[in-house]
Length: 118
Image 1 (cartoon, rainbow, N blue to C red):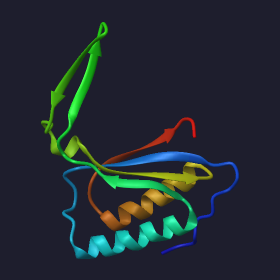
Image 2 (image 1 turned 90 degrees about the vertical axis):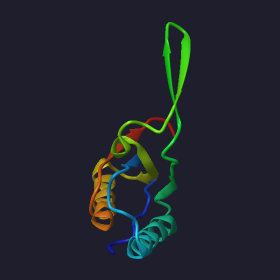
Image 3 (image 1 turned 180 degrees about the vertical axis):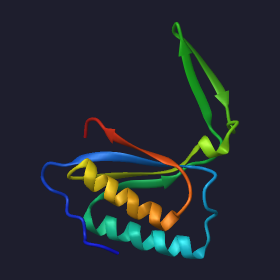
Image 4 (image 1 turned 135 degrees about the vertical axis):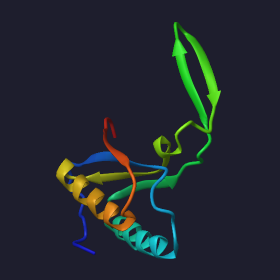
């Protein structure tokens, strides 16, 4: 699947999110993703990963007044359904791992964001 990633002393963390509406999970996807996650875990690159419920509570504040609105949200394809936090040497390395991830998943959308603070 590629070279093992080694975390250098100077590293950064990225949050990768996956939105709903992509490829439906099947046994092959679970197997391929399991191998990828195991590789990143062994290398110490994967900090955390998880799936998210499609329902939730949206929070907003205006002039100090907080409003809560229960999901599900109007567009499932815009809802974050899973995430991974990775620790790498550079944005380029994060993009390379994201590319490998999307080669496994094949279809869908998501975001990659630098995490400030460690």
